[in-house]
Length: 481
Ligand SMILES: *Cc1c(COP(=O)(O)O)cnc(C)c1O
Image 1: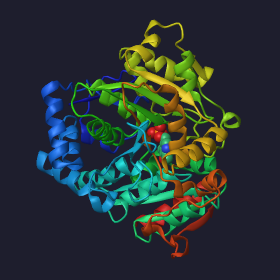
Image 2 (image 1 turned 135 degrees about the vertical axis):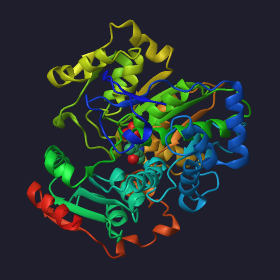
Image 3 (image 1 turned 60 degrees about the horizontal axis):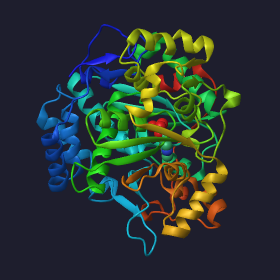
């Protein structure tokens, strides 16, 4: 398997070459040269593996279709080490929960529980694997890596929990001082591992991102201190997410003639892009429904064919904050496929075109019509009021408490139900992470998993700093020598 760039660069790379990289040299995103196609026998084999050996074995089977530069035994060991009941809370790792009212013959829909990992959000599903892959590959090369990131919550904590204690890796994670929820602060700052450095910046999230950009743009510093990132465009993260579409499908169906649909709470289009990859491989997915919050860049595209990046003033702070994006950083991958893999055109619309115009318009392009027909995409959006109402309704009807992002998914899923096809909504976080909105909706505190009792009072390790690039660089330097 070789990987190419969505912007047409001639290079072809192996999995481990792109594992530690972000963008391709031409600014594009990496994708496999082609998607492995599963015939009926292969799909039956995967169902057997899932049923008899479980998630880690399924992950190994799917990943080995895309990774041929890690010996099979090693890859299998990495999958086994990652997807354990100990880390993810259940034997199934991603159990399916039916939403079914008393007296009903069948569920209205299903939730696929992706948020029982260490940080209670679905990003653990990919990040935990990434931590093990990074440690493995760095040891093989005899190299080190310093991950520098900016977070407003979910991504940073998932990265820290994945990289804690890993050899060859240090994490320097900036976050806006005092602006994360007390629970999120406690989750991150209570990590006392020597290789994890929390840096609370006097400023907002954008200041943190600007610092990361400024440090990464200093190429000499970046090379000398082996600065890297773990952002959502990383192909290995996306690949890890493909696996749970298979696990969800096998749980909702009895045989491979049946279809299912998925609704995915979306921001950067990483999660649902993994669904697109699974569908391209031949997993019988009927619809892939993209659910956005008030930041509806993606819903607008699927309705109109126009992709319009939002400015800072147009980017709303919502009660599903992990979906508050101004542009969807993984979206280029799907558009490249939609444009029948025309790298030159992808480059034209996403490169200078987008920076100059702030939008592109495919509404007149015959290939845009295929987004729904050929690729199965639908979309919808949700607001704060919808979120509150959905959280109330799901709790009253099914006795299940859902978080704000999952509520966006359920709201939009209900607009796309088909009695013949089971609908699976991906549960992307647990309610405890967004307690204030739960209190607003239900008038009570969300349940707290036992292992998180009292984390707010644990000792904390965090360094508060001014939004000053030189000071951050000095801090990194000091902790690398
Ligand atoms: C990151 C995140 C999302 C959005 O996922 P994308 O892959 O960026 O589309 C949705 N919900 C939660 C809880 C998240 O942390």
